[in-house]
Image (tube, rainbow, N blue to C red; front, side, top):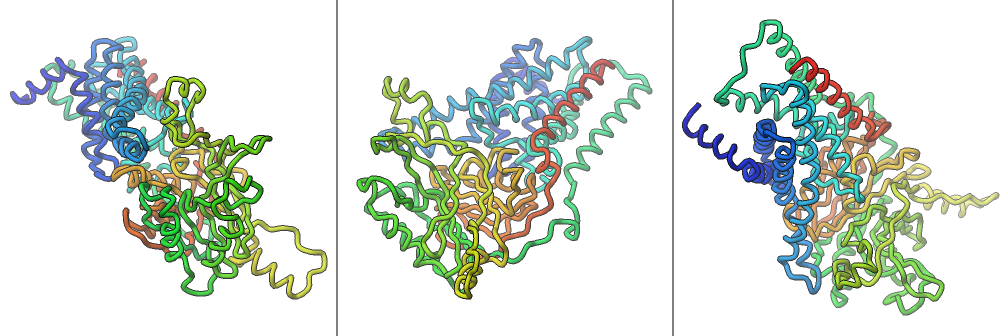
Length: 566
């Protein structure tokens, strides 16, 4: 052991929580846009070594909590940028929000650290950092705490650890994103922790030849499973679900920044940007995809006239002017909810279907709303103490029922005895893509980050449309959002198409590969054909039962190793 190593170990032993805080900050550099995943693996191994050296369970919990504070504060720094767009809010308040959120989210890695420490010290404490029981317990508990983080208090699943391996993420087809995160813990422990073992001043007594053989077999199995899953490839193309015809899509990115989006005097200029990028290049029927909240106009009829700046008929006519006769448009728009007195009491963040004849088709309402962004929890209480301004507007958004598949276009019952003109109209309107209907799964903005919650499994779609507004989220949020959308494509075996106002818009195939994309802060359009879906993956069939089951299996193996003193 070198003098430098001795000093580092002495400092870590004296200030373990400070070192854990720094390691947590370093670990976040593996996420986009930096993608320094080797540093993430190194930081996690160092953190696991600190937890293992802790003398008490509460100490292990504190080390885990400090690590989580550093990890989430750096990884979620983009949230601070969102506050700069809020009227009457100082910019520094954004960083307070990031820190407060991180203090809460850090509880989850703290629980994983405490649980792994308990397993390590169960019975006769393990003597080696690389004991199989400790590694397996840490991986299993990390999976479970990530899964808990995705739904407790409505959930905030941003940046699962497994997303650092997006280039080798095919195991997500089997065990989901949270299971992939567990593999990252195992990989970090197997390939990095042994280096910490060699540097220890006091090594455990030599093992017997039989114990050494059992240890080698155990680790060999772990390594083989990890490598096999990391390099697992999907089925050959011939065994995948075939494409069902060519579906041309036009994805529009107008490069309208958040500072301009709701400026009343800029509404016409913003629409002109969308219109210029939407006009057809040929006569093929297209599926036109616009971003979240693309237009400020209300497209539905029936509201009190005071709410309309432009009539629904005029608003839809502007859209129809951009379409071929058989085009279909999906765009983000707002819907209002009224009480019996005609007062607006709620709103819906919706995706609406507009046909080329100006009629509206099926609608999707966002279900997983952003606390403090789209609604204010406990509004009567918080408003009474002056905190209502945390949520823009005087009314809250209301949630929709959850994942839904829209049939586009929606097919009505045909007339009993249609004439030739009616038949032509039916074919043009009801089968513009050469098939009865295109099944579209919808996830608005950050709904796409929730693994296992993005698809109506009873009505599997042909692809997932993810309109979003990432203009709030600085330089780090959009690439992280895109990476998580790619994980959903791999898990579900479905293409994902993203349309955003400022980037990153993209067409992602069912293997998670980016086929076409538009960079941040550039106006543009994507004209391409919709990639085909795969047959349902194992994860698409069983969802988060698989990663939870994988975590329980790892914990069972950890207990089995621990009972043998390993």
